[in-house]
Image (cartoon, rainbow, N blue to C red):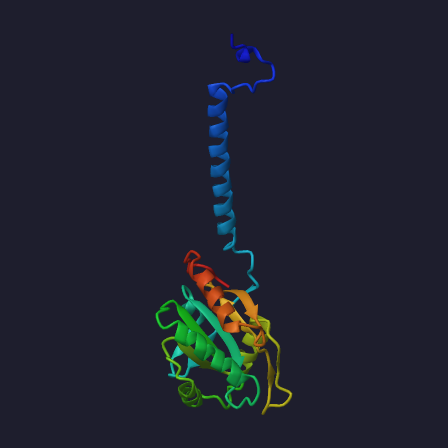
Length: 219
């Protein structure tokens, strides 16, 4: 006679309902983990990195056209401060912009902006010739000039960047690349000497392009 069914050392089978409950709990945990992952992914694009808001401005492009803050709302744009007679970092900054411009040939909602901090010399005609040296497409890469006092106030008080005109022929200026979102807010400030700068800026631009487009933000 087989008494194995009464053997206290034999493993006991779990009731069917216990297996069902265990299976449902596992499904719930998997679903919860997926929801948590998706939530953390969205938080990666939260608007927590706002550095400042671009103030109103009215400058002139290399084409002799007027450009204002309102014109750039709805666009993601990057701005640098330079001057055409600059023997130092400016050519490097313009070269980085040229690289980015090539990568953004189909980026209709992206603009690159180079604002001259030597406006008395850098007229629209001078800027246009300078732009040609870097193959700048005026529809995507905009060079700006304007009244000296307005440029200085915009740069230092509005965009919070360093600027010194102690030597008019060689002004000291910021070499940062400021990335602006569709609502006219400064979201990233990257240094010229950062490793893999172009790739980082392209990632910044891509992230902001994926954010909701809301043109209503005022300075």
